[in-house]
Amino acid sequence: MVALNIFFLVAGQTASTLLGRFYYNQGGNSKWMSTFVQTAGFPVLFVALYLFRSKSPSTQTTTSNPETSVTKITLIYIVLGLIIAADDLMYSYGLLYLPVSTYSLICASQLAFNAVFSYVLNAQKFTALILNSVILLTFSAALLGVDEDSQGTNGLSRGKYILGFTLTLGASATYSLILSLMQVTFEKVIKKETFSVVLNMQIYTALVATIASLVGLFASGEWKTLEGEMHAFSSGRLSYVMTLLWTAVSWQIASVGVVGLIFVVSSLFSNVISTLALPIIPVFAVIFFHDKMNGVKIIAMLMAIWGFVSYGYQLYISDKKARKTSVSVEENS
Image (cartoon, rainbow, N blue to C red):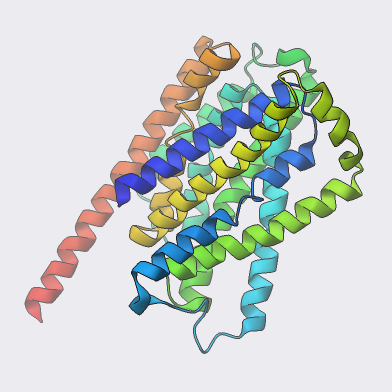
């Protein structure tokens, strides 16, 4: 179950990122459309919810504790959904203004932000390994920020590169904040973390984010350019539609993996695995989009992988200690 969810998350995230870059490379230019497809495929999650409930009728749960008011839960879904929409928009700008290899390596910094937010909001302890991971990922992102070879690529100005870098970094921080806020919601408000509860959280926040993206699409006037964009798409109109469709599906495949890992392991582990694909994506970027892979990027990628391994090993140690403690308690009782 864990291995399957890891596959869904890594494959979905890799495919959606590469398809997002393909959309821009072929002539797509709507940031709001790119934002929209990141959550618009949320109805796919209803299939997972139905399959889970049909296989486990005895474990059906409502979205909240009887003590939790519907109004409070609804408000939380709305707030988180709006934050997700803003986060997706920042990612869309980042993917437009950065080479996909640079973009994905900067996104790996979300693990460092996750450590900070988990410490502040989820009472996670800072250990030497976690601190090592934070430092490595911070330096990895900093290297890319001063990498002159990446600046000005794809015919973009240095100003747009800096904007893309800043927004991608902000999006990574926001994503980590979202996961920590969800964890707080499960522990303090809903007070349960079953598969259906986690899935409902994903579905309803995605619904709010999708509506917000649609409002942004029409309010910005970008909807007027979509027909022309489709006709001008380099690989054809059918390819335009299929690119957007499969981008949306890929994001939801990744979401299924996220939900599964949150349920089976934890939201922290889910975030760690979500960064696993990020150092892998640059390899595909070199193959499919001919991104330049200079020495700075290679060093940044190795530092990101080192940071990931350091963080993952700390989780392994913590989990091992928790299991020993649990066994000792059971034996004593």
